[in-house]
Length: 160
Image 1 (cartoon, one colour):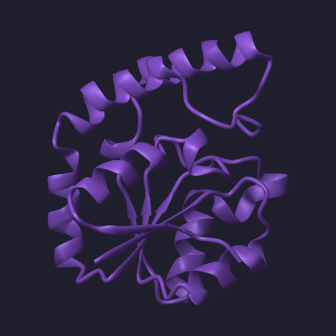
Image 2 (image 1 turned 60 degrees about the horizontal axis):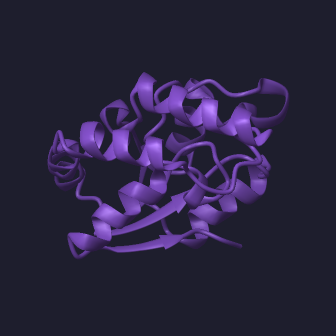
């Protein structure tokens, strides 16, 4: 299995799907807690619309909420962003508080072992790990990426 990461912010529908084709993604792993997005800009990346679009491209979709951050981690990051005067869209990195909480809760629960079993059942070869933030370092995908690399997997950020 090989993993790739991507976000929705700053993308448009056609380039988004071109990336999935370019990297020959066969399984799309959505690690968001909520699957809602601003419909006027990122409607293609929201819930059922995303699932339908992926299905039409022959890509299997998995919403793995167990890999999303806890409410406490999210609130910690929001408070940090507010202090810096930034937004989720413009954030460049995660704060230490978020990283500690996510690592001690979500990653410590061994949620990836469950995910790995599902990926094996799907016979996944090229998996896209998806959340909204553009840059991995601004998102919990970066922590998942680090964990996967420690486990010996190849992980790459998807770019045009």
